Amino acid sequence: MHRGLFVLNKKSFGSIYGPAEREAIHQLLHIPPLPYSREEIALCPELLMDIEVLVSGWGAPKLDAAFLEAAPRLQAVFYGAGSIKAIVTDCFWDKAIPITSAYAANAVPVAEFTFSQIILCLKRVWYYAQAVRKEHTFPERQHTPGAFQTNIGLISLGMIGRRVAEFLKLLDVNVLAYDPYLTDQIAAELGVRPCSLDEIFHCSDVVSLHTPWLPETENLIRGHHFLSMKPNASFINTARGAVVCEPELIDALTVRQDIQAVLDVTHPEPPAPESPLYRLPNVMLTPHIAGSVQDECRRMGQYMVEELRRYLSGEPLEWAIDRECAALLA
Image 1: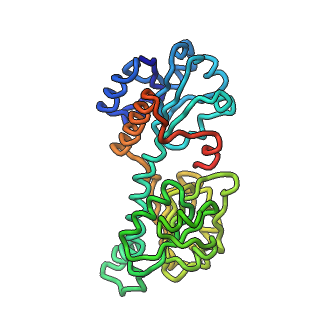
Image 2 (image 1 turned 60 degrees about the horizontal axis):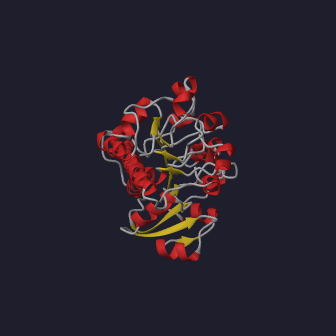
Image 3 (image 1 turned 180 degrees about the vertical axis):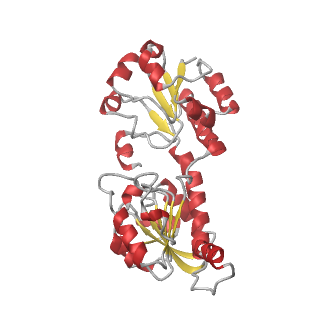
């Protein structure tokens, strides 16, 4: 039986690996029952000497030269969370050690959250809820797009964007999509119409952002995009705040108060106390809750159990990440 070790922070361990997931892993690996933190591993690197499988999640150790030297028998890494960017290094990639992540599991609640917000935005729920609270009566109805033959714009069709596109098939809406890697075949499968980034903002009743934060995508979305939006349109960001030029977003929302912005992410997180985002009436802020929270985190643990079974059976890992793939993920 392969030797393994849990290395992640203790809070994440309890969230990601519930009793059922832990029991399954113990059936598959010779592994201590409790996790070590990366700080404990740094103080006692000899704990890594015999391990072949690392099971981790939020609070994972940096897979750098020192870690790899202390773990000479390491054969595979199972990361029960999303992005691996903070933990992988060139040294790790050079070793060609397989690594898999639960990014696909984390995409599920983000897509669900996004789909819910698209429907609410099409009904202008946040505008009306605020108006009712302020006026203590039902306000006169403004133009409300609704979900009949309106346009939904998706920016980037990675794991999350594709799930949202699949959900949107349940509605009688037109789906526009911007993604530099979108092929005609994928567009046909998802039922989306490829278009430019400018067209997405100009034509959509709701725009939903799913672009990963990469050097080339930072500040991709600018003020002129928001200023070009249709009357009473909405913008949803469940990706990363840095993909949007936030000062220009604030300026545009100040001028165009008919536009609703639903921001689950900002840059920085949370916004500075003096940020106008807290005061603008057409902004709804949530504290980065679209991804896996509380019991939803166990789905990520389940994905890692399934990946571990595949690995030990000699099957291909379904969610393996290589150097090239990692460069494109959030």
